[in-house]
Image (tube, rainbow, N blue to C red; front, side, top):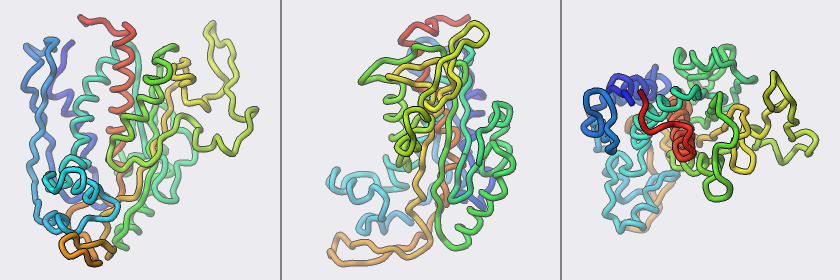
Length: 331
């Protein structure tokens, strides 16, 4: 298929913050270069290699973490797992920076899906105690990158900004919820048990730094509901089978049922905060403290919107290719 650096760059630009008030002051252009797998504007069938250089590097704040692991980060288990030889700069392999690669790959996945009519979107539905309050329309989801908190419900944006502003002023951070949607997914996509559509989605989403919970549809509410409240009843609408509701999130038994895929992803409050926290000095084995001095995000959600979109697209395109929904040569 045809693909260009500009198309990939357009997706990577969505990962950049619109406002440094609510995000890191680090300035990365995330300029992508396609170095193999594309020739004369079309993919060749060889693996596509894309490179995104780090251009605004400052590893000095991380020197302290070599002996004083940050609570809530992977510093301590990484030291144990790799015997102290891991690259701790910027968080290394555990940094949120790894998600740039997911978004670059997701750009190709989204284009492939668009060729068969599948559309993928996401938005921030909760920051702290501020919630969207309703499901957004498709048109609202298409405009999600027009505001700094990336919430598709316009009336909720101000409250979310207020929550973030207060947390930043207090040197603290906030948790968030990102919801992803895929429309026009045909029924029967996926495999049971080990490669269900839902289990593959959960596996990839949990690989994203900061994710603490994933559910399909109204899964987080399921423990408090009765069967009569949770089931999605089948009906015929304009000659096709659909459901009256979509509490299952579009997946049953690991297979898509033809309703929109709807996934909710809960992100923890970032652990690096400008408040003093307790830790241990691994050299002296004595109690000590840490206080963040580097460049960090006070909330993951706004920058995670294109990441959730990409994870959703990557899983869907894998299953679509495996089941022959997308051909090998696209004119």
